[in-house]
Length: 449
Image (tube, rainbow, N blue to C red; front, side):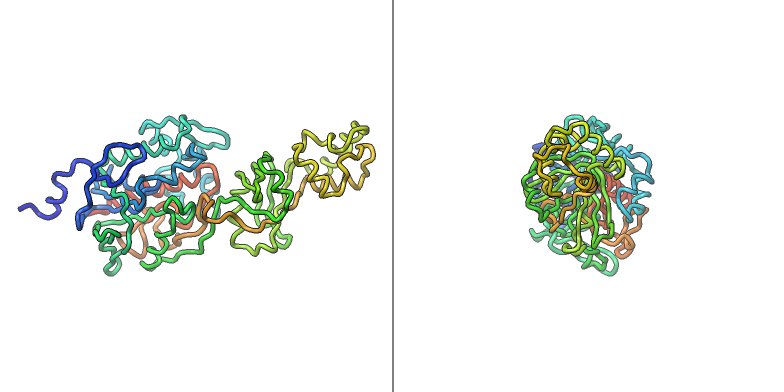
């Protein structure tokens, strides 16, 4: 009689797929056996999990990928408004890590092993042609996130990764400083030599990112920092903001202050919404909001960040002098969007029908000051339900940056949003997933013996 491991694997030629894949490929409707033993078990079929599983399998490991949803990459399909901003073509690794704040340096080794160039190259190899848009954002030429997901599914199939959908992990068994097995909600047990947690954060919980990995890590002795929504729209108290719904301000600078002290600034685009503001600059600023006392916060919108006050004031004086007979609201069209003019004039108590020639020097002074600092009051964010990323996570002090291995559990690795790193918009968070997932999968496969 063949040994147990051989009886489990000797006839397996294709990956086991329970559920449906997004590319609707044919699947094997076969239930997991009561206990399966693998080299590597990956939890979470998001970007980090798929990359980790694919790389481990590529190196010859027997890999199982567990996903509690009935399909892979649900959150991936939403990225870039369905276009999938899969990376950022910032090839200077020092500059790249700066987009992740104070924890960015942790990623330097992962990026040096598999950075943006490697990500683009891999997807090109997998048949996904890419293009680089403004601010180095990398998208598939098709503008379809589904093409990126399909490529990853094919990558898994090529490595004969066994994917089990609808497989929620209910319990993690450990013995000493090692994980001994995973118990699924079905009652089945999965055992492996090494385990990789790629369960994501808490953002967009409807896609399955409900923070499970944080609880598992804490139960195993890891420290988890407080979690906050990141890359999320901001709610404002000003009623006039809702009246500007849909208005876009490009190239503005936002400055967040608390009790008058500057906390953070961001430049980019802003979009007004019925609840407040969104857009790239707002999203990048948002992670600073949640940890702070709301009653003390203000956001200043600088409409002309490349012009100083004196230059702006002189420019206004000249423009109004040249159009003395026109109403003030008509004189400001161009430098300021039409829909925004009446709001700004009301803030400084100037009648929009007042002739430009009748505007006083004090009123010009007040207008110039306002253009450089339209102050609004944040009253919160839209929370994890609308957040693109999670701020906080498993302490980086407890993870080896060269392997992504836990310093507490000898056969445990982490990758992706579950660790305490979050980046700006523009493909940086997906790059974190690809790079740490690749490194974790490679390290786990090499340590399978």
